[in-house]
Image (cartoon, rainbow, N blue to C red):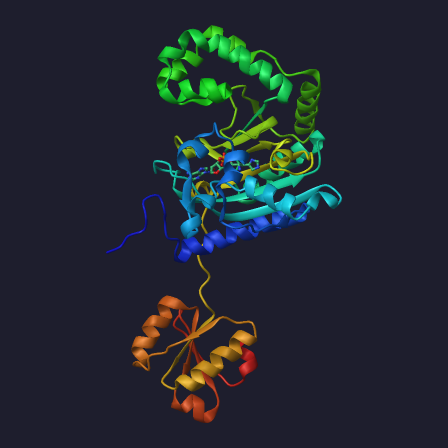
Length: 411
Ligand code: HAM
């Protein structure tokens, strides 16, 4: 038997119904805030992620599904299944010249992402994200709006037990200064750090701060390292941006925790970064994560455009929410006259009812057995009913059966 690939999953029946509900609630939440849905391709040029997500990120280094396509021109055409969607949305923003439209331009998406990671609870190789991206506004009111929307979305699913973590990575200038201080502080301990952190030390030292390896955690817990990390290093401009944001959040009554170790795993972030975590998710505790990426549009060849967004892991959200049961269809038509049964089913659906019928010309007892598992009511359409023009309707929970003379009483 051929099975689904490791780290991938089929979504069926009630689960599928609940996924549809998740997308609907997200769509309503974002539409109310003026976001429109964007659908970008599932694969993009590999270069987009190399340049967009960044050469020093784990995603680009070891997690991408990259293929060479195009026969003889193989090397010229390397594509990658999207590991995330910010880069793709930015590519679309530039390609459609959306900067000509008045800012902000606000988008949301829902779809599969692909990362070649070691599968475990809450971590898959094909997983799904709901995300939003907003372009053209630098003002911290946009950061507050985005964080508020993330919280609002979780609340729409009746979730309240989560924690918002917030940090500012500063701008290009202050980030550089910070990186240097971190490098200086870490240097005496570099030998004892994990192999990944040794590479990070060269390529993107800030990423060392969220390494989960026990050996690195121990070093990061040292007082002298903590002192450097916790120092207020961001420039006055970035500090003002961050303080205004926290002011807004305070005004809105949003609880958050400033976590100076929060650096996020993708290279494009600057200034505001945030994650929302749940203690019910185990080691993969982030339900969602996001932040500002004010240089990405420019990096990918567009005009200078501030931007911010977040993405939520749908599988992780699904594991937290209360599930709803699939609504049973209103009617199951029990008949040995498939033509009349089909006609009645179609008519009922046109009238706004849900209806199924038995395709198999089976014994009524078998059809009724199926009906009682499937629908709320059975309409029995036997010879008498067809010839005399009435319907026998059986309530499948109470087993009560009534005679209905008029079609309008069915709808
Ligand atoms: P990210 O933190 O890499 O950010 O992913 C966002 C969310 O996707 C995570 O918090 C998690 O819930 C989910 N996720 C990530 N990897 C997996 C996995 N292997 N299995 C299951 N769920 C996973 C981004 O992707 C950024 N593009 C977010 C963003 C949008 N930043 C700005 N705009």
